[in-house]
Image 1 (tube, rainbow, N blue to C red):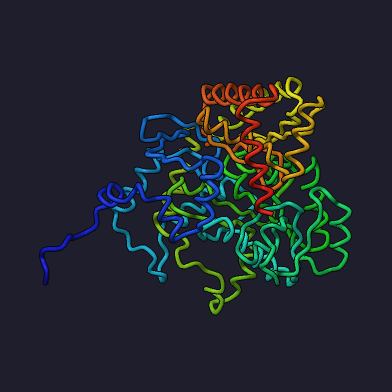
Image 2 (image 1 turned 90 degrees about the vertical axis):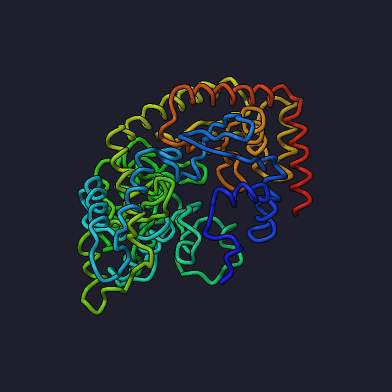
Length: 465
């Protein structure tokens, strides 16, 4: 045995020795287009630490996070209660994932989730949002004995094959056919729903109460009317709350904004993780679960190797406890209203700013064609090269000049989506609105670095055709 070599594993030492290689390692071993894209738009930052709704770089500069890891960081980063729960569960040395026993944590987390969903009865735990959707699709097909799922145009439900079959964006679907024979309808199109249900082969409609792409809410009354139509035809309503759930929109679930809506299956994930341990959950009615798990022979007909693991369950329980103790849902509603009101007040001030919409802390800022000739010619130049470039022109200076991280809401969209941690406060709102106002002032001045960067984006878009 050689005693001269290094022993054990030292994470701090590994990061100290090789952390600076992060972009090179990603280029060589992972998705090589990601670092290329980040460098192109100047997003190739090196963040050293994070807490709550903020990052810090090596120089101690503070960045405001208005993206929350695509909604994963509902409580912000490194909430002390969630951290302690994970330390505690690791220190407990539980006999986890034996596969042939019943640990208490999954049942306790299911009980907590169902308390927020009193019309639902049972939970399946998986590992991600797309897996939660896959579960709902399988359960709906089996429970109804029908093959087809309806979904809404421009929806995003995940990127695994089943979820991709109900993904309303061709850019994600292209090249992955054949997919399942599911059918898109327009968000809010009850006539299309009636027409498809008359064919008698529809198992369910899956819908985001507020679509992540573009931040479009379902029209008032649509979910309730769709639910009634579906049930009349013995089909199910699936609410995808992976991004909108757990307080994001100012209610625990986004479907709760419409009275009388009680989905048959509900999918959650993202914020349930506390930002630490991947977890997804599919909540459903008792009769659906009993039909799927109809006998002991079918006890493992749908399962997940890491589903219900102790770390994920502890994180989920801690998240729900924090949300209750800190009244996170009410805070998100108040802070979201303040942010949306202050941004809406800018619409009449800037001709490039078209609309501000959303609920709670899920807000879409849409840009549109200006009226003045000088700005209109520049807008037309960007649109001819690639739709969505102006929104990218706003996102970049927000980060570069004001150290605020945001995202364009989808490919070929002139919309910025704000989904910050639900713990942002009034000072964070002030910081964002001040920065956004400065960027809009620059855009409307007709010159400067912002439009120079726009020309760079045009060249890049043309080169990629």
